Each structure stands twice: as structure tokens, then as C-alpha cells.
Length: 155
Image 1 (cartoon, rainbow, N blue to C red):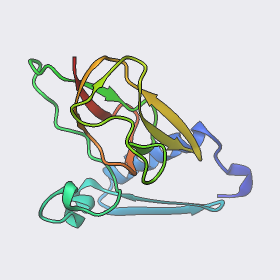
Image 2 (image 1 turned 180 degrees about the vertical axis):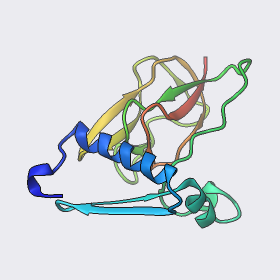
Image 3 (image 1 turned 90 degrees about the vertical axis):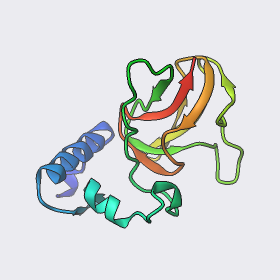
Image 4 (image 1 turned 120 degrees about the vertical axis):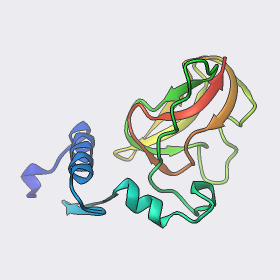
């Protein structure tokens, strides 16, 4: 890829989505791309699962690719706040700071629940429902995709 073809803004996120689809359709475990000073490593779900300790994602150290939560039955009372864009999700404004919300806490509509870093910009993610936080669906520092559940809230 030449400098003239360097993707900007949303084009980069669209490129990442296309590369992910390519990886999922192939028999590859990993796809690594470097262009214009940007490095990207994508791993297939089976490769990520093979890297996880026996205890699952909570036993793993650090971030990684966040897996979507299993869909709940229609009768479930919880509502998921979804990621509006693809990027890295953070539960607190800075390392070592208190998280925006905790499991079991009451939240209101418009309350910040986390940040998503995309293209070196931090985007505040706000709840679209009031209620009690049931759980975080992803760990801080994890890569999330647009429309992926971030937290579950019981109205």
C-alpha cells in the first residue's frame, strides 16, 4: 500500500472490517498487515480460543479480542448497551482511575459507561437505558466491534 492509498478515518475501520471478513472466510489463523506505519494483527476466533488459559477470558492477562456474549432468551430482562463503533474499550478515564460504572450500580440515560478509542480519539460511550448494571460484557483494553454488547443493564 502506498502513501497515496493510506486509509483515513472511517475508511480504516471499514478496511479492518473487510480484513476480518477475509480472515473468517479463509483457513488462516492470523492475518498481519503493516502499511504506512500502521500495524494490525487479526486472529481467528479458534486461534484466540487456543491461546486462552483453561479458566477462560477472565484468567487471561491483558486485553485481546473481545468475544460477543451468548444471546440471551427473549424472556431475559437485561438490556445490552452496544458499542457504536469499532475500537478499544476502556472502563475508566485513565489507567488506575475508578471505572465509570461498577457492576450492581444504578445508572441513568446519558451516563458515561466507558470510552472507545478509535483513530487515536477517545469517544465517550453513554448508556441508552436507566437501570442496574448487571455485568460488563468485555474487559478494559479489549477490541470491540460496532454493535457488540459492552454492558448489560437490568431496567
